[in-house]
Length: 485
Image (cartoon, rainbow, N blue to C red; front, side, top):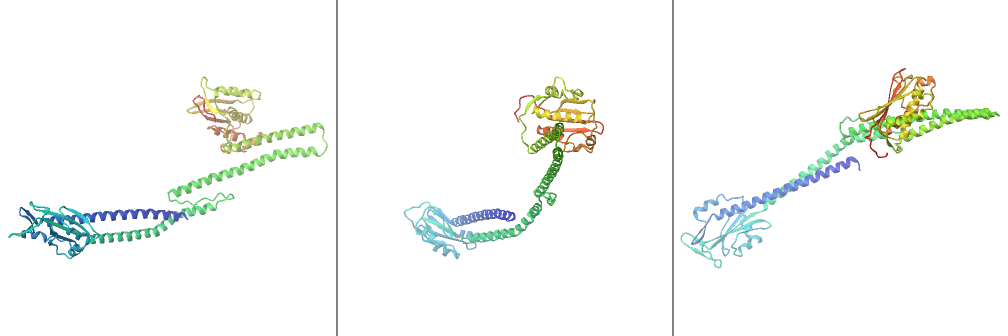
């Protein structure tokens, strides 16, 4: 089932529930209203007919001449029948409408005249809503019913008024309403089916275009993007987000391709040199000194190759977000002098000038060995690109929630156009190549990745022939023991 069909089925189902609920509620309200009208009509006729009966000490008298006028306006389009009877069930008066015979012959209403009833009550039959009211004289004897003829008229012990209102017109009205509601609901439902199908198809057509665009994307060509909908709705946001994701994926794939190509090239060079030395040594017999020189050269190349492989493995592990070793809180002002002692045998150790704020703790949550690796990379980089005898400044401090360390040299510096590439793997400036500085361009990328793994950052400021200043920023802690990472 397509998304368009599922959406249409959902809309039609909800519309069906609404139409059924609305029609049922409207029908019940109409039924209740019409029943109230019938009951009001019944009460009106009972009250009017009762007004034509006069009760006195002689008995109850039906229809004095002066009250005949009240029946002229008692007309309900021949929907009402009424009968006045004495206590024995003998009819004293009745309505003249054509519905009266039907009312008298109805089994459900004729029973009320077979027995003398002396209290008011209401009942319903299949065709009538009926009611009966009794009027008794002040000298009424329940066990005896009589009628006395006097000059003024006929007097009775009791008279009953039975009124029936036919339910036919009400049921006909309800049936017409039910048929109308069914027809109207079906018409609306069918109309929504055709219109909704078209609307759903048009509304979801961008999804179809997105599917076609996605099917054209493959590993060989990541430049394909989804069409811009420009509808400023959720689908437009989805398309933009998907294109943004494709941009990131394309950039990541391109970086991986460049990284793989650069790594292959860098690994090929020492391997070629090693194999060349071995081939030369095997061409003829060599002296022990020649073999020693060859092995020394191979050892240097292999050591360089091993360092490069270790660096590549570290970058690969960093890309997969592998966990860093257990971290601990250290005070940089205390840790820094201790770490600099490991540089005491370096030829330029005396040129490293360290400065840190006195009587101030600079606490960070790091792995000390890896923090030392970052600092060693920055110091080694400063020694490579500055002349011997020039100072190398190492400072630390705190600003807001960041503890920082800077390594500044007075070397050749970096062109503004090259600064953005210094943290890319295998990136080396033209100046470093011209000067023959040893390295493959992996130290600064490793230092950058380590800084980011500790939640910090590594930045650089430099100008040509003005030296470089690398700044390591790490989140400051409150000095209490923290959880291990």
